Image 1 (tube, helix red, strand yellow):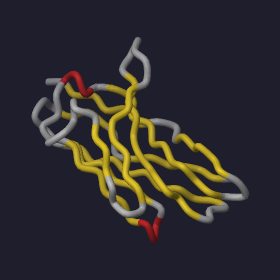
Image 2 (cartoon, rainbow, N blue to C red):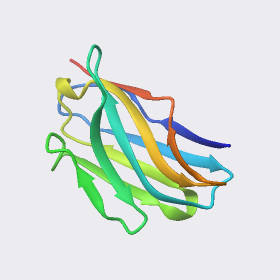
Image 3 (spheres, rainbow, N blue to C red):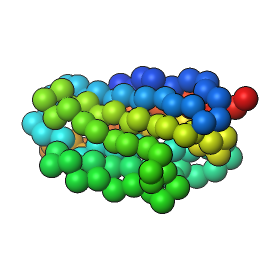
Image 4 (tube, rainbow, N blue to C red):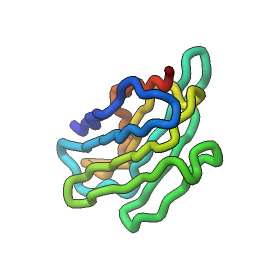
Length: 118
């Protein structure tokens, strides 16, 4: 059993910052990649960012220069620093991880709501 637990969402004014965290726990051998997806109300899920154990990153164009992903491999934890937030960033953010446990797993967190509004 592998779980992803997210934290750090909330309400912030436009131009503000938030930091999301996501920790993987359970029967884990390795976590080759972790990342975030977002889903705004009424929309489909969208890719935001991804990071590998070697710190190779891939960002959606909409967040480049504003969001920064990092990870602590020893803790199987990923962080998303979100700066210069815009109202259009409002969404539920879901953590995602590729996990080698007993076998290969795609694991999702429960989601954390980010609301950007004045």
